Length: 263
Image 1 (cartoon, one colour):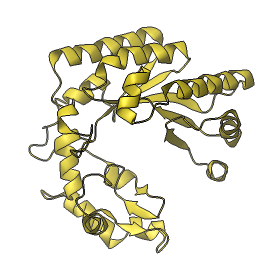
Image 2: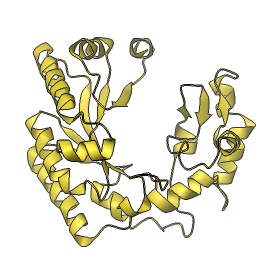
Image 3: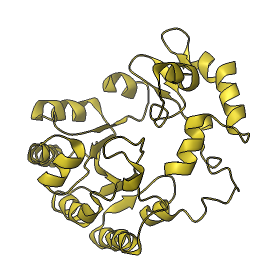
């Protein structure tokens, strides 16, 4: 699949937990020309990782990643760029500095801080969210990690053009009055396609629905196995979604996103 896309001039990336990154697969990713490999890493210790991710695989993942980075160096392969993607929550924020150290020690040059998308189940709960809820101490920790990354030559990013600290505070959040979703550009710049072919407005859309009926009626815009993506993208259902987005009554998942975890 990666080779197919690269042959057509596409920039290719994906997120992974790293558990299945064997030497053979790593070699195949390099040979296929993968541009980015984003490793989901929500802790800097085995205990916290297992608690957040639900699997005791921290040591195995880091063995895999170290071997992969070493393989890249041996082959003088600049791609894929390896980055760490950290979902920040109260449960794990204290380990962010340790993650910076892990990145530096293993030659990983980027860390991306993600806000928690929650739907009141398990750890995906509003009480874990840091967005507009962070304490002074939590914000200071993020500020310290920004500085530490800068000193170590690690790129520290967050959603859009915001810095990690700004992404948690978002002073510009209410710039457009009571329409906090309005700054999102996803309805006009990208789409999200599931393995079953369903076309959704973005990667947040699969979360928060109460039933399969709601998901099908309110979230699914089309299906690429039934209709070409061009027709779906320019079709009436997508256009209706965009018109609602531009009004005061967007799709439920857009208003939830803007209010609860932002875009």
